[in-house]
Amino acid sequence: MDEHYELETLAVRAGIERSQFNEHSEAMYLTSSFVFKNAAQAAARFSGQEPGNIYARFTNPTVSVFERRLAALEGAERCVATASGMSAILSTVMGLLSAGDHVIASRSIFGTTVQLFNNILARFGVETTLVSLTDPAEWRAAIRPNTRLLFVETPSNPLTEVCDIAELSRVAQEAGAKLAVDNCFCTPILQRPLELGADIVIHSATKYLDGQGRVLGGAVLGDAKTLEGIYGFLRTAGPTLSAFNAWVILKGLETLNIRMQAQSANALDLAQWLEAQPQVERVYYPGLPSHPQHALAMRQQKSGGAILAFDVKGGKDAAWRVVDNTRLLSITANLGDTKTTITHPATTTHSRVTPEQRAAAGIGDGLLRVAVGLEAVSDIKKDLERGLAAR
Ligand SMILES: *Cc1c(COP(=O)(O)O)cnc(C)c1O
Image (cartoon, rainbow, N blue to C red):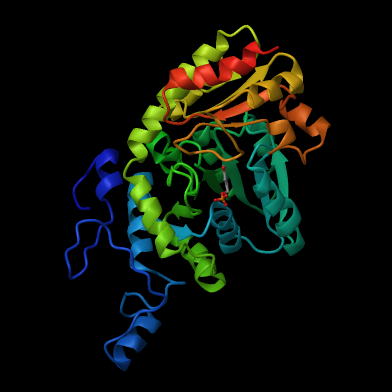
C-alpha cells in the first residue's frame, strides 16, 4: 500500500490484489500451475523477464498476498512463506550457509531448532555454538572468523527470558554475520526485530499468526538481497506454504492485533494473580516488575506477551496436580492459540534434555508453562486454583 498505515490497518488490508472478479475477501487459488498466453510468454516468465506465476512451488497468488501482508507488518522488504516454522529455519540456514560456516545460537531456542543445528546441520559441516541468551559477552566470546549467523528467540521458552536485540545486532555486525530472530512469541504486533537491527525475522505461523490452531506454516523476512538465496533454496527444495494454509493464516492475521492485545492483557492479569498465590514459588513473565529483564522487555516489546511460566511449590507431584485438576485448559505442548494451554516442560518439551541441563537452564520439576488464550481470565484462574489448592 502506498500510503503509511498503522499495524491495525495493515493486518486486515495489506497485500490484497484482486482478480478480474473484484472479490472483496481474498480468494484462494488452488492451482499447482499457471498457463501462458503463448510460447513467448512462457519463455519470458521462465527467463524472469516477465514477472508472474509459473508453478506453485515457486509462487501462488494466495501465498503472495500472505507474504506481502506479513512483510508490511514486520516492516520487511521481502517475505518468503514456508510450509512450517521449522522449514522457515531450514530454508534460512540452507540459503545462507555453506560447509565450514559457524552459527551461534542461544541455548534456550526451540528444542527442534537445536536438533536441526546439532544433528543435521553438523552433518553438512556447519558447526553451532550454544550460548546464554541474556549475556552479550558470551556471544562476543563465541565469535570465530567463519561465524555467519547469530540465531535467537526472545522471549525464550519456557522461562520468558529476554535478550537485547539491538545489542546482539551490534555483535553480529562486528562479526560480519547476520542476526536472525525467531519472533514467534511476540509477533510483529508486540515486537519488530528488523527495526531493532536484526537482519532476518523467522516465524512459525502455526502459532499466533494463525492463532486458532488449524494449520502449519512459516515465514522468513528481511531485505530482498538476503531473502533471494533463501527463496532460491525454497523454490528448489520445495518446503513451500500451500495456498490453503496461506489463506487460513491470512484470515488469522486480520485478528492478530486484537488477539495479541487481549491475550497479553489476560496473561498480565494471570501473572499478577499467580504471584500472589502462596503455593506459587516464582512467576516468569516479562510484564512483571519482578522479571529480571522487565525494563528491557518493556522497551523492546509493546507488552509482556501471552506466555508465562511459574514454579509450583512441591516439585513435579504438585505441578502434575495442577495440570490434572484442570477442566478448561488444554493439556498440550502447543501455544499461540485462542484456547489456553498448559504444559509441564520437564516431562514434555524438555524431557529429552538431561536433568543436569534442565537444572542449568532453570527448568525445575515444579515449572508449568501457560500460553494464555482468550477465555475470561477469571475462568482460567478458577481452573488453576483447583489444582493449586489440592495439596
Ligand atoms: C513451534 C515453534 C517453531 C517450529 O514451528 P513449526 O511450525 O512447528 O514447524 C519454531 N520456533 C518456535 C519459537 C516455535 O514455538
